[in-house]
Structures are given as structure tokens and as C-alpha cells.
Length: 118
Image 1 (cartoon, rainbow, N blue to C red):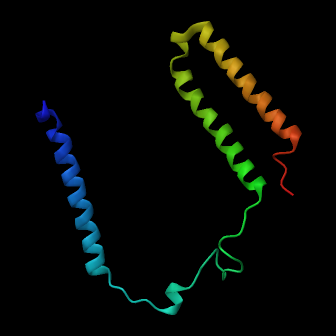
Image 2 (image 1 turned 120 degrees about the vertical axis):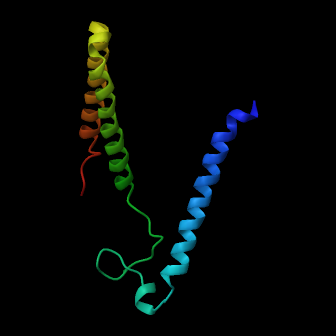
Image 3 (image 1 turned 180 degrees about the vertical axis):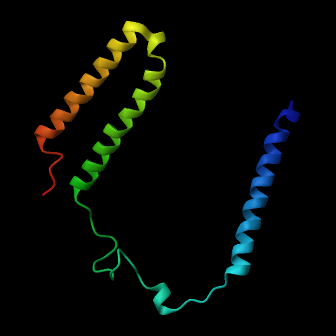
């Protein structure tokens, strides 16, 4: 029974060994010459001007979550379109209901002003 796990064990051993080998080569050949310019904070082409632990506006997170939700919903359209002939009318109706709910949610967020950036 344990013989079936041998390929997995070999894969993990080779992957770990290769990772350690490549990291070791990088450390050995890379060199380490720190200076003030290398260690300085760099953000978007200019010096950091505020604390790194500042709070982000909640709208940033809201827009990001909405983007992820509405963007990932499109991923459901690809497998549906591939098997549309097999699903028939039921699959078509189900997808229209799904898209209707998605549009209703989008309109709701739009009307609430969640997509406005001031």
C-alpha cells in the first residue's frame, strides 16, 4: 500500500532539493553589498511620505471586492458555453437567471454609490 506513495515522495524530495539548490546558488553567487541607496524605501518613483501602517479608505476595499466578484462571475460563462448543447433549455434558463441576478446586484451597487470614487 505504501508503494503507491513512493512517486509522491520522490517528487517532494526532488522539488525540495531543487529549491534548496537554486536558493543556495543565488546566495553564493549573488553577493551582498548593502548601502544606503539600496536599503532606502522606494515607492512609485518617489520617497515614502507617510507611515507604512496608514489606514486605507474602506471604499478601496469595497471597489476591490466588487471587481473580484463581478470579474470572477465571467469565469462561470466559459464552462457553461462549452456544454450549452448538452444542458439544453434548462441550462440556458439557469444562466439567464444567474446573469439577471448578477445585473440586479450590479445595479444595486451602482445605485448605492459604491462604485463612485470621490
